[in-house]
Amino acid sequence: MSGIYLHIPFCKQACHYCDFHFSTSLKKKDKLVKSIALELVLRKDEIRGPIETIYFGGGTPSLLTIDELQFLINTIYQNFTVIENPEITLEANPDDLTVLMFDDGDSGTIFEQYRAIGINRLSIGIQSFYEDDLILMNRAHNSQEAIKCLSEATRYFENITIDLIYGVPNMSNEKWTANIEKALSFGIKHISSYALTVEPKTALASYIAKGKIDALKDVVAHEHFQILVNTLENNGFIHYELSNFGKTNYFSKHNTSYWLGKPYLGVGPSAHSFNGTQRGWNIANNTKYISAIEQNKLPIERETLSVSNCYNEYVMMGLRTIYGVSLNKVRNDFGTLYETHIKKMAQKHIDQGLLVVISEIEKSSAVQVQKIFTTTKGKFLCDGIASDLFMV
Image (cartoon, rainbow, N blue to C red; front, side, top):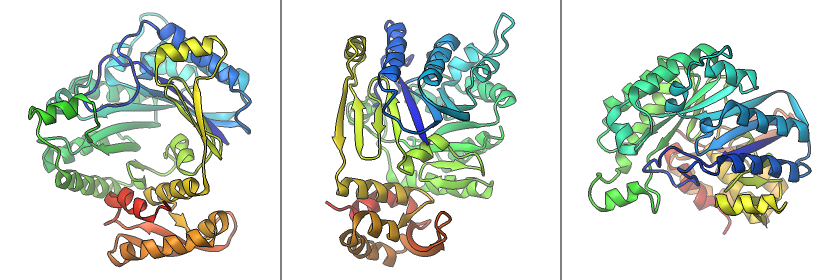
C-alpha cells in the first residue's frame, strides 16, 4: 500500500513561524494545479501497489476550488490503482472554511461539497483559540472563526484532526490547558500538537532577535507537553507519535505510512517522495517547477539511501512512535554490528529511565521480539536520544 502527497504552495499570508515552501501570490495557481496533474501522469509508474491514502498539504490546500480539487483527485484515479474508500485528507484553515461555509446554490455547504468529491478527513489549522496567540503567530483567522469553523465542520465530518501549538510566549499552563479543553469540547478525535520553534530566516526569528517577542523557553514547552500528554491520555487518546494523539481507529493512515517506512509519492513544488530505497525532492520554486513540468521534465533530485541512512531513519521513527525499535529487525535488516551499536548506545538512556526494552509477540510473525521504547520521561527528548543511537 502506498500514499500520494500533493503540496499546494499557496497561503493568504505568511505565519511568523513557518519555513515551508509557499507563495502568497495566487497568480500562478491555475498553471500550478495543471502542472501537479501532469506530474502525476509523468510519474504514474513510480508507485507499485494500490494507493490507500491521498493527502492535500501545503501551504493552504483549502485555497483550491472544489473543481480544482476534483480535477486532481480524478487525475489520481485515472492514473493509479486506488483502494476502495481511501483516506483522503485536506488541510484547511478556519478562515477559508468560514468564508466558504455556505453556498448560494443547491450544492450545499462547503463540507458537503468536500464529501461529495471524496474527501473524508479534514486537518484544520487552529493553532490556538486565543486572539493574542493568533496575532503573534500572524495567523489569517481569528478565534471566533476557529470556533465557528469547528462547530460546523463537526456536523459533517467525524474524522477531523486539528493542529495546536504550545510553548508560545506568555502562554500560561492554565491558558494552554484551556486550549486543549476547548478542542475536546468539539468531540475532536485526533490532535496534532507541536512546540513553537524558531526556524532561521522566519519573521519569528527576526522579532526575537530584535527583542520584539520574548525568547522561547524550553522549560515552558516541556511543561506544556506534559499537560498535553496527561490531558489527552486521560480523555481516551493514544499518544501514537511524538506530536500526534488519536482515539482508536482515528490515527492518520497517511502519516503513519511515513513512520512505518512505506513508499509514497510527493508531487508539487518542494514535495518529497520515497520508494523504499531512494528519496526524492522537487524543486522549491513555483516558476521553475511549472516550467520544467510543461516541458515534460521532472524537477526532482534523488538520493539512494545507505544502510546507515535507513537504520538512522528507522531508529528516529521508532522512538517517536508507539511502534518502537525492534532489535530483531535491526539485526536482520542491518546486521549484528548495528545491533551491538544500538544496545551499547541505548544503555545510558535506559539507566536514566528515558528508554526501556520490552519483549512482545510480533503480530505478523508470532515471534517474540525485543523492542526499545521511549518512556514517558523520555518522550519529549526522543529526537536527541535518537541522535545518540545513530550510526554516523
